[in-house]
Amino acid sequence: MHVVVNAAMSADGKLSSRRREQLAISGEEDFARVDRLRADSDAVVVGVGTVLADDPSLTVKDETLCEQRLERGESAQPARVVVDSNGRTPEDAAVLDDRAATYVCLSEAAPIDSRMDLADHAELVTAGEDRVDLLRAFATLQGQGLERLMVEGGGELIFSLFDVGLVDELTVYVGAKVIGGRDAPTLADGDGFVDEFPLLSLESVKRIDDGALLRWTVDS
Image 1 (tube, helix red, strand yellow):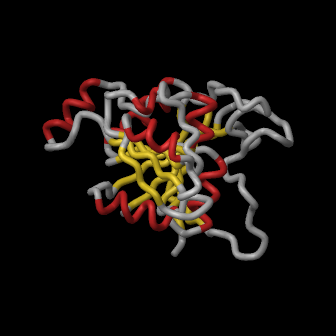
Image 2 (tube, one colour):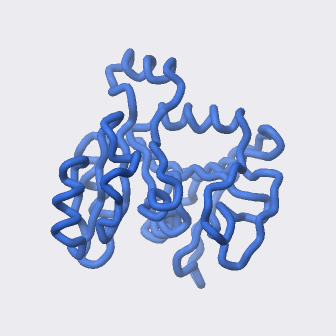
């Protein structure tokens, strides 16, 4: 399995404002790059916080890219994965529509009513008692043939993936905007590392729109 974390952040490292409202950080060129990255993935992964804040569809927008997937013998759209320990994904969330297959990763603590509602729209993956056990959940996804995973956020999920050693590559678009705010989400939130820190190797830097795209691989 190869896991790529892709994110857009402000010049001061914020994913959105303290209100956690979706903000335009990238421009058209980077949007197109993200669409290509989605099209090259088996699945697009987000945490439930991103679903609740942004209601993303997580689909490829360029029809030509969808056609190329079909020509490769793949589905027109990559699968979608929501990491949602307590089953908070709304039934009417865009990620649960019929445009692509969806997996929802739950913990055993998720209420049975939520499970039943979500089971009508997605395939459920249960791993972990109180929180999703990411290693077990991703192993299950891999068993379903999902080898190339693109993670789009948010900060809590990204930190957790680094914490368990599941990230292979990090691509970040840094936009020409300062957001500020001690409570604004950052690229990797969670508890934070205090002694052993994941180390990265910078592979490339490219100017895109009014910002820069940085690509790192994660040192093993």
